Length: 197
Ligand SMILES: C[S@@+](CC[C@H](N)C(=O)[O-])C[C@H]1O[C@@H](n2cnc3c(N)ncnc32)[C@H](O)[C@@H]1O
Image (cartoon, rainbow, N blue to C red; front, side, top):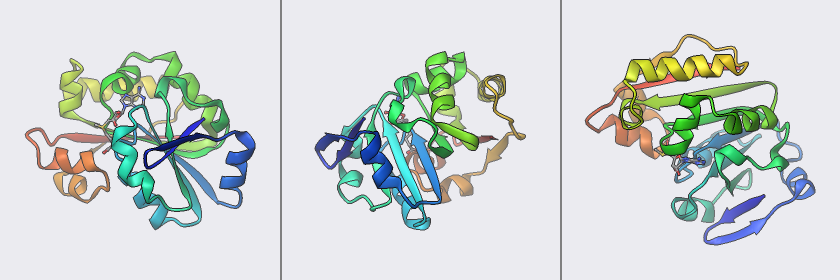
């Protein structure tokens, strides 16, 4: 799989990855990681965990990946074609404020995305998806219907879902991603947290 450090891309195989993640308690994979801020925050807050960020767009990752912690790694991949090297590794998966084809795949029950999520997840892995009103509106859904659609799609794909929880503006301001802050200070600060395992 293709990994990124600053502007420098390289490839990591299964054994190289096994070496990097050896000895860590949990493996957290953040899909659609954007500028990688969430990964860096988690890696620093949980030094016994290994945290990986995946995004299709490499430009936004240049800065954070250059100064990444030793327990974190950034990959360039499409969420609909997750690298097979991740097979069975994830104890936690997050998708924070998806847009574009990532959000579309969640809404339309895209097998390419859900096969990949099933492939990378360990048994009992947790999944946290955070959605926002603006992205759902751009995708042609109302906030309530879009959130409910994704919740139903996740349940249909075998995730045991808890009740969806609205995220307050103060929660968004505290949440360690760039988009959470943009949403909190933007015109449509509605957001919801869907949790499953
Ligand atoms: C609104 S940004 C959110 C970024 C970050 N999670 C945050 O909260 O700051 C959505 C991200 O999803 C990524 N994305 C969209 N479609 C994707 C796909 N099919 N595969 C991987 N990443 C995708 C975009 O490149 C972008 O970085």
